[in-house]
Length: 336
Image (cartoon, rainbow, N blue to C red; front, side, top):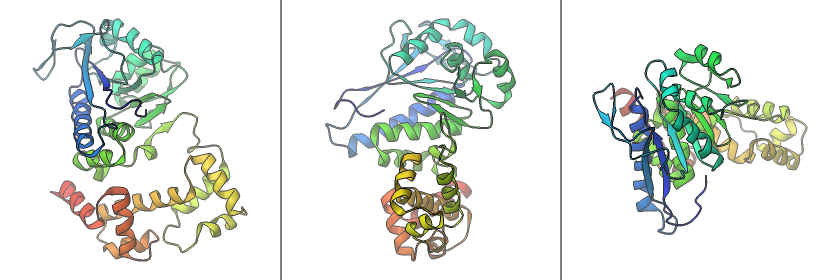
């Protein structure tokens, strides 16, 4: 989703019901508010859109939670606003009674989808999306414990239990809280840009997560496109990061002119070979900094940069920090 008009608020609704997993409600709120705070101080006024958050329930009565906290809906589905984003939290215990008792919310999800909302289902919360028929014929995931029951209840859904994230156009389903965090970072980048997303990532879970694009099952993609030759080249690039080949030479290795190679690569992956290779190197460098004792210079050589300075410049461009700073943050979070 892209910014539509300056200063118009982003309306985000979160469904609430009995037995919801409260962390799948509070975590996205905290992350989205962190992204908003960063954007407010870094974006121009005509680019910034404030958040409006709504808790939407079947009824407006307080909802008791297993934690002992009461959740008070801001509105019911009948008065809920047209939402840019809807988050459907996970459910403790068997989701079937919750689905039965919230038929109004289920109907509202279907209407909201027709009104162009993005929707994120969390764990067994995806049962409400499936009940609304939004997932029929599309990929989805859910909490592993309920995968078999989900298949029986919703046989028309293409369940992908081995994936923590699936995406079908504006529909996202996630299987865990970590996966939810990754999708929220991805959505923050859509709303407020990459720098805001990186800021939130650094403050929540960036050191142990893979990029959203690397984890998801994207409907219509065959790892994630149908061009088998480009897929072979991607595999070759991943396994030859430390080599000294130029992309022109890589194209020649696969009997392609550089012009044809770049055109096919862009058509298949929606990014240029240069962008893909650069991001691949940065991601590999992040993993080495987090999990090895290689020096910064050695990490640079491992991912194909001639010296530490080159790696530092790329890190500042993509992550707004140096490799040394990144390693320090990672080590504190992993081992502190």
